[in-house]
Image: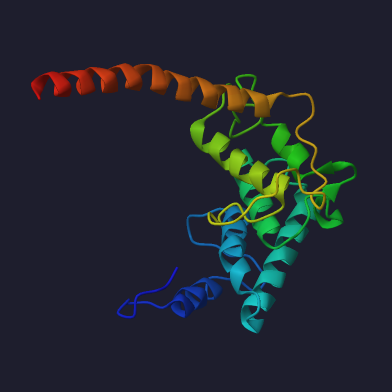
Length: 212
């Protein structure tokens, strides 16, 4: 979007402010935030500006930090929200879900995210949680959309391909049925809304006609 001419801060001001939050090891962090999650979010935000040499260097350092963290911990103790943000951030940079830097043998980040899938169709924050929650599920849907179409999930105005991107090599979560569960749930919500809304509309329309 276009920044208003009388805006207090320019786009460059925000980019500079983000770059100033990066540490020497490549991580982005605040005093109260998770470094992996914050770094992933910042990479998503900066991904559009990599033609700038300073941004490109910062992004490369950020990816290196995430790679080092993955190599050290395999992200096994991270929440689904953090995993989702990392997936989205890497996808914004055109880094494939199967990139060897973020894969542990045959297991990639999507497989780790799948471990948080709940029997109710949503996603749990931690894999040992009793039930799913809205934020974790929303974050996972964003990440899975990024994987499926191999494109930034934050760009609203874009044409998506009719089929799964061959670049992403993503074939869906194994045997979980989560995708169809989400579609069915959306269908039920829409059908319910129509079932309630149409009679109300017709009643109001009839009353309006009688008044006239």
